[in-house]
Image (tube, rainbow, N blue to C red; front, side, top):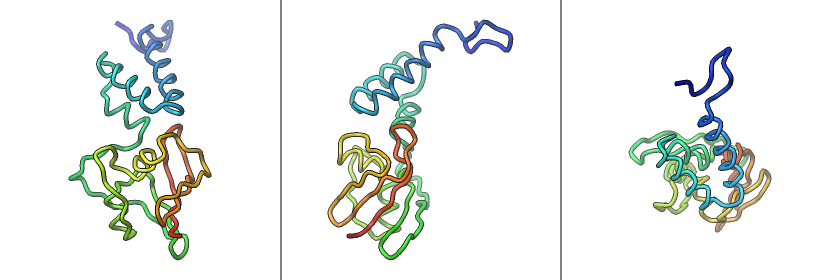
Length: 153
């Protein structure tokens, strides 16, 4: 049975072509409706095409287990201004920067926290205020927030 096709084959199997189109639809869906995107991911996982975690990470960013500790990627821009990897865990960023961002079962990363707060996919350059902090979206990869500037105001 061929799935991806061969070097001299007739192209990918129809199931792979359908799956690829499905992933493209999900990426577009995630831009406007995160809940529908999650439902779509669950359907693909039930079909056995991929794991829910693989697709969730593609849309929402890195998912890690809470017992895995990593140093967050933080660089100091100036006094009270930092650039961080948005996929860093909230607790790790809190510890590194002395912040008090809330933790919840709905998210693990700083990107997840911001998505939870604003309930939509932000755009590059967008500023999101939270208490005495200002988050500026510096870099996106599709619907995934990659890099942020964090300023204490």
